[in-house]
Image (cartoon, rainbow, N blue to C red; front, side):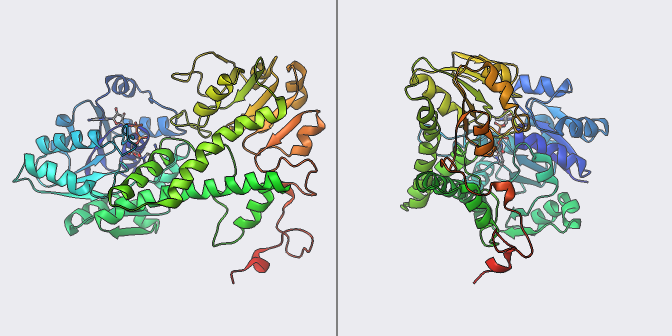
Length: 462
Ligand code: NAD
């Protein structure tokens, strides 16, 4: 058992705190937002994350988890302090380290005996050294080490990702710090989770390099999809077959409206600035940023490809979060797409299973389900692939619509099926008129097959 403080109870901090408590450690979570703190102390969770409420409740009940508002109440009692505050982009797109600096100063002021200071937040290479210098300046005599332990969890499946990660990265320069980190992550060692022990600088870079690569992969398949639209191919089949190649893998090969969320947009931008700062022009990443911006706007062009001029038209938007199973709308494609539809003269009716308000976007009529949203509209735009949009009743949708048009920004539906109901339909990279002889679900992996995609034996690496 290790005494731990986690500063910041956002998506990462609260999941980290609850999971580390569940591993058997004693955890104090600190947040300086009084509203969040009150919600937590009243037994609530300030955001939506499946399974988190139960995990928090269970560990509160075991007296292994506590919430406080001030680092002074937590840090002196802890051997390890995790920093899990936000690192949003500043006005120039650099990672804003203001909160990290604040927390480092608070840790320096309150630490008591040897303390390991761990960054869970995504921070540029060199931040470990910055934290060290802030602490050293305020407490020259203090005994401490700084560790980088970047987090790779995904919102919507955060607990599973934290409890069964693909790898744990521990960037440290001291054996003493590593020993404490190993103690904390002992349950994962038992699961034989790969542990990467490396330098602080490498650990900091691993996180940015990973996120930027995933953003690149998404942008790549989005461009393949755009090309498929033009040459009459189906990106879902293309991606599926690509993904059977172990060197490529099928993850993050789903064409769509562009990536969003609290990580990819800010981390890709921050990495271009990290490169810029040392005089390196990161050209592939610059292209990713541009491709993603255009991809979001392309969804609006898809609507007008079905409806023509959008003035006076009403559009139903299904899903506004950047992905299902989260309430996070930070940098969601919906924040670009809805205002652009409005700018072109369309009225918006929207539904999302969790969100019913978007800061800074007015004039949206929020509805209680997909069918209410579709009523009286000219087109339905499926923007987030929540489960409840995966089996829509197209006859029911059509009944109340002014004209039947459907833009499937997530390629959930077989175009032929939607068209059967009399809908004008378009999707991302499968908007060809003559449907392919097979749909995505027909691409079964058969042992002996000559006319469809067969087992990877034939696709083996050369
Ligand atoms: P968040 O905005 O949800 O939470 C940050 C929390 O820190 C807030 O509750 C805020 O009140 C609190 N805070 C800020 N300053 C504080 C201070 N001085 N003292 C105490 N509390 C303070 O952020 P998040 O999404 O959890 O992200 C945190 C970090 O983790 C970021 O660097 C992010 O890039 C990284 N990350 C996020 C994800 C994700 O999916 N959200 C995944 C991996 C890594």
